[in-house]
Length: 278
Image (cartoon, rainbow, N blue to C red):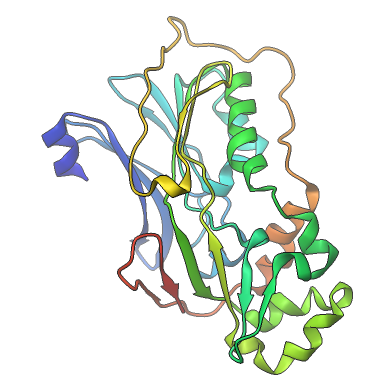
C-alpha cells in the first residue's frame, strides 16, 4: 500500500487484521504519497468479530495535505458517539467496510438442508434489510450533520463461512423458531452464506450521493469530486440518532458478544469476495 500510494501519487486506505504485540486489531491504514501513515483501530467489533480481534478505544484524525480526515471501520458507523468525536475537527470522513448481510443470509446444514434468515423467527426477521440503514442511511445522515463529505469502500461478491460458535449462536433463536430443533444434532457444522452489503458510497456535505457501486459490478471503483469547506464546519443543531433498530445493537453487543470466543484460524479459498474462517 505504501509503495502503491507513492507510485500513483495518491492517498490510499485499506484495512487488515494487524498483530500488535500479543493482540490483533482490525486496523484501517491511510497512506500519503510521501510515506506518512495513519492507523485507526475498529472501536466496535460486530458480534462474532470479537473472536478475531480486540477493540480500539479512540478515534483517529489524519492530518493530510488534503485536509483533516476522520477514520472509521464498518460497524463503527452505527455509533453516534464516534461521529460526535469528529464534530468540528475534520474536513472529510473516510470509512472502509466489508459486512456480509447475515441478517438476510442462508444457513446450510451438513445433511444438505437450508434455512433462510426469514425462517429463523421474528428476531431475525426484524433485522432483515437493515444493512443499508447502517451503511448508507447513517453515514449520509451523520456527515450531513457534521457538514463534511464522506467516502466509503467495501468488498463485493458473496461469502460462505462456518458459523462461529454455532451452538451458542443458534440456540438463542429457538424460543421463537421451534423449527430449528430438528437441526440441533448438526449445529456444530452449520455454515452461513450471504452477499456482501453494498456500502461503497461518496456523499456530499449535505449527505447527497455523488457516486456508488452495486455488487453485480464486481471489482471496480467509483470516483467523484468533492469540495471541502473553506472553513471547518461546525454541526448545526442536535445530533440525529442513527436509524438503527435497538435489536441490532442488542444482537451485536450483548447476545452474540457473549458467544464469541476461542482461537480463530483464518484462510481464504482464493476466490474474490469469498473466505473461510475457522
